[in-house]
Length: 120
Image 1 (tube, rainbow, N blue to C red):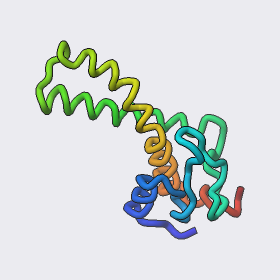
Image 2: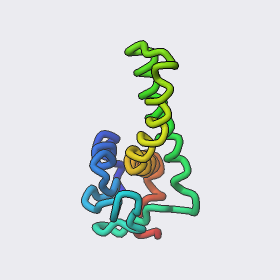
Image 3: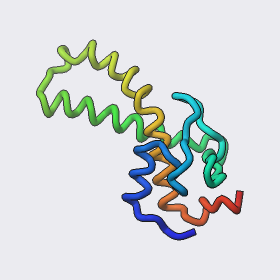
Image 4: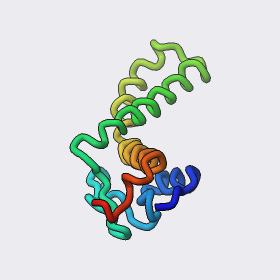
């Protein structure tokens, strides 16, 4: 399988598409993923617990928002306490699909041989 440019793979991730072919959608609903790409038959979840790493991406995106509000706009923690509580629940729910998609795309970029649909 040829090595795809990182920019192409990340664009596909942000569009919630298969990192291999770019055509197949990753999700059936908001939280439910396809098991395989409808376009190229790439298996998305390569092992049990595969998407655990996506929680780190989701946490990082949430933390960046807090840092931007606290240090960038200079809100103090007392002012941020209630919005921060809501943000810690709502932002990860919103980012869930993107975190999984980015995790899959990054893994696809760095493990080219492991993402050969013919090996599944």
